[in-house]
Image (cartoon, rainbow, N blue to C red; front, side, top):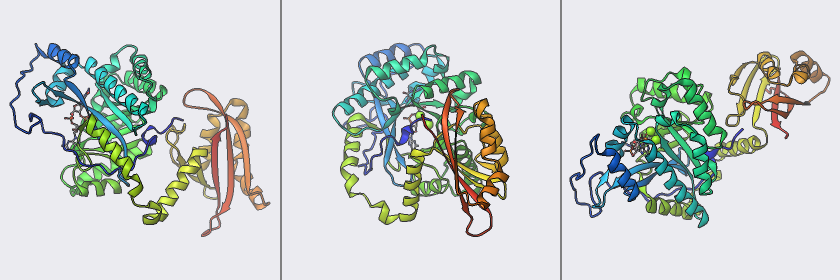
Amino acid sequence: MTDFAFYAILIIVNFKQKEERPDFQDRSGFKSIMSIEINRNNIKELIEKAMHSEEIKVYYQPKHDAINGKAVGAEALARWITRDGEIISPAKFIPPLEELGLIMPLDWYMLENVCKFLSGEIKNGRPVVTVSVNFSRLHTEEKDYTQKLCAMVNKYGVPHELIEIEITESALASDENNVISFVQEIRDAGFAASIDDFGSGLSSLNFVKDVPANVIKIDKSLLSGNCENEKERIVLESIFDFAHRLKLVTVAEGVETKEQLGFLRTCGCEIIQGFLFARPMPEEDFREALKNSENHSHQSEDILLTQPPATATQLLLDVVFKRYPLIIMSNLNRNSFYMMAYENFSTRSCPSTGVYTELIGHGAATMHPDDRKLFSDTFDIDDQLNSYKNGERTRTVVTRQLGDDGIYRRVETTNYYIKNPSADDVLAITLSRAIE
Ligand code: C2E
Ligand code: MG
Ligand code: MG
């Protein structure tokens, strides 16, 4: 189980909306024409020079909690600001760089600048959030990618959970096994990984389910208008359902209207990135925005008074999950269960609802061979129902369970038996946690 990087630092937001200056407008606001002509022959040299002279800047676009509007992260986006103040959008230079296979140095440059920024903010005691950095699919072929990533982030003393790697959906078109191991290595090193622009390409859902990313970013092209078209709503609802069942955190990109936000909330979308909340902004403005959000945190509404039942339930669940990352509710009389797991507690291969005896069979298969019988006997339905009749209200077992990482851990599983108030069924609430 890994930390939930997105929620590592929650900051109450009250962003002053600082407008990103539109492309090709200088600092005084006067329009200027693009004075640099980029072509296949000069792009390598131009970009190298621009990086060297720090004309390529990192802009930050905050990401917000869909329910309470807090800033929970930001995306780093490249902007080329020429000496005469002209801003060149990435749309002008990223696609040709990718096409020519020259994008890699730029992505590393961006990461390094994000690390410098975060490290400075941390040293000065200023608030920080997880920042995602775009890495072109070409990096999946890069040798020693993860070592290089760790070396750079460690050089600046930035905690890994403050960095998220965004890989676009089109990357999934590359060699499947390559992409899976690429993302797995990133996750194993403690970074978050997201599938960017989901829905913009043709990747198969079947493959996406195998990519061990923990975040999925839904492409803005799926949000047309105010989400009033029924068929488009169905597509979005299905995508969110699919993502949630895979236990992926969902981010909607390009959210511009309150209506879109309202619909996305009904889909259970967790995080919003878009002009509705904030535009990409230069470092100084981003720092200011985070500072303001901290200052405003005390004046925000009291969620315990404004949304008490939902908030209280969520808080309670968060706290219980801190101790028990896996909770299962089972109906012993009906042989059914519903499972809730915190983040990706090794349940990837198990459905969240279904037949209880199959769940126990699945669980037993992940146990150490010497513990399988103990596990199956402890959770035998008839035995539990008989014991319940004889007054047993709780039972605990400790077994060694194999994690997705291939390591056995001692896991304590406790069942609490309760009667369903509206029927005769006996329900078992299972709380499970690793004890080493
Ligand atoms: P992306 O990674 O999907 O980034 C989100 C894009 O959506 C950004 O465009 C952002 O400005 C834009 N956006 C955000 N909110 C809204 C909204 O509400 N409405 C609309 N219409 N647009 C919104 P941007 O900055 O022009 O970047 C375009 C693409 O260029 C990025 O798409 C990313 O794929 C690529 N890119 C940018 N920086 C880098 C980089 O450092 N490395 C790599 N490999 N690609 C980068
Ligand atoms: Mg992105
Ligand atoms: Mg995107």
